[in-house]
Every structure is written in structure tokens, then in C-alpha cells.
Figure: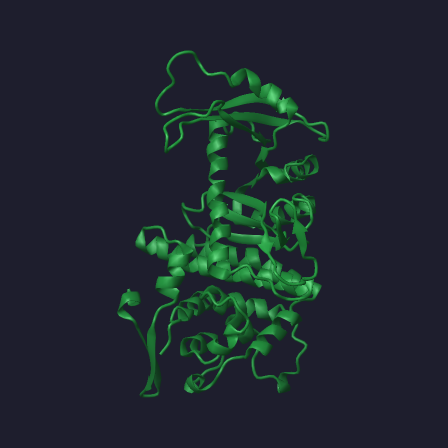
Length: 425
């Protein structure tokens, strides 16, 4: 009996796209072949499938080692003997993470992120890449409770954290639209007390390099914490369009003031929203000027129906030309970034962000493996949405499809998996 029959679906996607097999072939394994029981690809599958199924703790490996569905999905050898075998234990799984913690190994894991997205994109799109794709870049906190190397107190979050930064690709900038291979394409782990834009110039260039093969036309969306002159210049130098929210300052407030007064008379019941062109803007620390758009949001409170004393407003900075994307079109494109932020919530809920290793390198390895598992589970979600015509939250995918019950039996020299009727559909 198993409650993780969805591991077979993970293996099916993995097998068709050649994901873990090619990844394992590109990783160095220092172990002697005559003294090992589990190959590198089997250990990778056990680790990644376990994460995708929601087993975030290292100790879960000992339980999964005896699960029949996991054994069928992970085992890389012919014959029905697999049903009598067991998978790797928790120490073997942890030694895998440590072996993959060297710099070349971590680079190989990072390079696998866009490769996996690309393979799913081409499989789902009949060999085609998308015409327009968007790269979302944002840092996010991972709360820590031990003495991990590089952990530090962050004044904004009021927690002890790591502060990694990740880049995610989506077709047309919409994660709820056509799913032609969306997912994380680049990530690095950073110490907890680093600045929001620290290392962003190099990160942006590397992310663009990885995402270029995924779309004919690529653009970037960033949040206010990353909008600095060198970052904008780095993206602009790559010939890529960007849009980012910019923090307010006295000069920007002065530019917005003429547009903040309300028209005389009774305000409309539904409220107002405006996107206004302010021309070219160059901050004191910038080396070049960029287009500035003022967004005014003057909407009533959904509970009380009353408006604020003064309308809410913010600014967008971009290198899009006005004839290519209007001010309102720019705002609508930037607002789709909210679906990207939902991905972080799904990552925390489905995969789990915990990084308990003592060394910084091992924790970055663990983070990259978690993102690979998230991309793999996202492929299942994409196929479900295409086949059912409805949206699927990744937590729902995990609970109703991947965490499916089944009876595994041996009969007539074959192994049968009888899946629970509720999930069999």
C-alpha cells in the first residue's frame, strides 16, 4: 500500500524529458562504482521526488525508502526485484547534498534549471519556444532557526534569515495563462544581512543569458528594492526591455503633485485609476535617463466604500518606448507580476524553504534542488491544466494527484499498481 502513487507521474515526466538522467551524467561522482549500492541518478530521483511529494525533512528519506511507489519510480534497473529492495537512507541522502556542494556541482545544478524549463516548453509547445517571455527577478527571505553559516538578522523582516534571489520565466508575463514551460531559471543564496540589490548586476546578466533561448522577445520585471542605476543599465545594455517600481523621493513627489488633486464635484462610485506619462527621469546616481510613469490609484475601500483622504500613487520606470507599450499597458503588464509572487507562496507551502545545513554551500545546494523539484512538480500542474481546462494550485496538485493512494501487487511476473479511483481519473 502506498499514499504516494504520484511518484510514478513524476518519473514519467522525468523519463520522457530525460531530466535527472542527463543531470546526473553531468555531475561528478567521486565514489568507487564497486563499493556503492545506489547510483547518482537514483539518489537524485529519490531526493527530488520526495521534495515534490511534500517530504521536506531529511528524516523522511528513511520512510520513503520502503514505499513501493517510490521504489518503482526511483529504481534504475530492470526486473521486478525492485519490489523487494529498499532505497537510500537519510545519511546517504545527506551525503548526496554534501557531494553536490562544490562550486562546479552547484553550477551544474543551476544550469539545469533553465534546461528543464526549456525541455518542458518544447514538449508542450510541439518544439516551439514562445514569442514573448518575461523574466521576474526578486529576493525573498528564508527564515532560519539554527547557526547556519551566513545567517543574519534582517532589520526589515525582523527575523534571522537567508536572503536568496531568484529569477522565474513565464510566457507573455502571465503565470496563469498559457503554460509553455514556466519555472525558475536562476537562483543564488545570499547571506541574511545583504542589501536587496547586492550582486544584482551580475545576477541580471546571468538570468538573461539563461532565459534568452526560451523566448524570441524577452523582457524583465523587477521590484523597487532592485531599481538602482547600475542594475537598470546592465539590463538595458543587454538589449532587454524592463519595467520596475521605483521608490518615492522628494523629487518624484514634486513631479506627482500636479496630478494628485481630485476633480471638483461628486466622485464616481467605482473610483479612478490613472497611468500618466512623466517623460524622461534620471536620478542623481544614475548614468542615463529612463521613461517614468505615474500610477494613481483612487479607489474606495472594499469594506467601507470610503476613499482615503489622499489618493495612493507610485511610479514605474522603464526603457519601453511609449509607442510599443502605453502607460496603461505597462501598468497591466507589471501587475501580472503578482502571479509570480504567488509562486513564492506555493514554494513555501509545497516544497518547504527550510535550509538546516551548517555550511553555506550545502544550503545553496539544497535550495537549488528544491527549485528543481518545484519545476518538476510545476510540469505536472501544467499538463493537468492543459488537459482539464481549469486552473490548479500546486498544493492541490500535490494533495489530490501526487499524494494518491494505490495498492501495489505482484502477479504473473508483473507488477500492478491499482490507483485509488478518486485519483485514477
